[in-house]
Image (cartoon, rainbow, N blue to C red; front, side):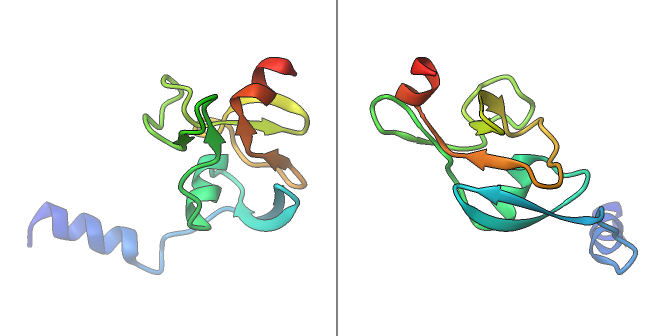
Length: 106
């Protein structure tokens, strides 16, 4: 058995544990998330692929996944320009998708 097959079986087994389920709010809609995952991970788990738009209305979501590119910016609890790919979810967190004009004007 290849190491790739072994890894896939390990990841898909019942031994894979997620963090404690928590509730977050995204654009006024309640969503389930798990402690230890990022905002981007929670959004991707709901099927959401973009959550920011540039000033030219181009959709953006997670690109680099390590906090370098800034494509995944969201507003969290009223604070704009939070990188969703490196920010862990927290119980009761309020996340809003962001448009370029909102981010620069406050």
